[in-house]
Amino acid sequence: MEVATRMSRLGTESAFEVLAKAKELERNGVDIVHLEIGEPDFDTPRHIRDTAINAINDGETHYTPSAGIFEVRSRIAKYISETRGLDVSPDNIVITSGAKPIIFHTMLALVNPGDEVLYPNPGFPIYESMINFVGGKPVPIKLDVKKDFKIDIKEIQNSISDKTKLLVINSPNNPCGSVLYKEDLENLSKLVLDNDLIVLSDEVYNRFLYQGEHVSIATFPNMMERTIILDGMSKTYAMTGWRLGFAVVPDLFLEGFVRLNTNNISCAASFSQLSIIGAFDGPDQETNKMIEEFRQRKELIVSGLNSIKGINCPDPQGAFYVFPSIRDTGMKSSDFVDQLLPRGVACLDGESFGFFGEGCVRFSFANTKQNIEKAIKRIRDFIG
Image (cartoon, rainbow, N blue to C red; front, side, top):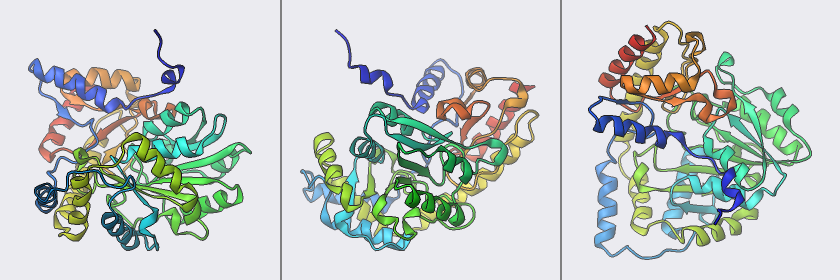
């Protein structure tokens, strides 16, 4: 018996693999500082939990329409208007079980075998995985540590061919922490329009900005009808385990998205969906407090890593990751990660985020300041 050949094209997310190894070491008595997993180390705010608990107690435990509960989609549309300044109909909102299905749905609905897809590299590994899975051709947008992971518009323009169909952007970026600002997005929008492309704009880290304001590419002229916005609750509201994502989907692609939801998940959990209203209507102090804490941790880990010989750590503009170069240590990224883990620090190999990530590693600073300081000491002792 054999599995389908398409399974050989499916990648993975190494954070969960490293987490499993780290947990095994912990069972054997090794103290590990977890800087590998990308989730806020905060509890979901109480008012959000109460909304879901009340929904369960009120009997909201049944199927919903595949796109989601209308009242929840209406509140999401209002949230998109508040945060992006876009006039969005609830009919164009699709709620998913986590944000990853939005990547999955986009590739399945839009990419034919042989179509080329531009995507950030280093970047979230599921982009490349899903492009390959549906038979598309991944075309990397190189983000270079020497340029602080900024995009090069001319390089992107030169990468576009008559087979290019989709552009994936992620701002703030995982793993690099780089941000696409207004000028970048305006230039990208012109390329998109000139070449009749579609955009998947991953904006799940939009609240985690350490300078400037978030801008969506969908706000530029004629871009709403060709942009799928990806967002969700996991990061901003510390709700990773709730599995709640949502997309703003143009009319042309909407039916396909809803059908994919129907075929894949039926719908997101009803009581979980209703927690979105609790999050958006409730107080924002805990989210603001969390983001300020991440800002302080960022400064701590950047200064700490840059004080270690052989490490060069750019200052991220968003998200909660640093992606330092370790080339001057003389080690490959995979060796650095593998040898550091039993010494008590879990992080990720830069190449797991794409070919151009070699020579870098990713540290998540979603951990306490005390543990970050402990990790810095261990890394310094490891490099010697």
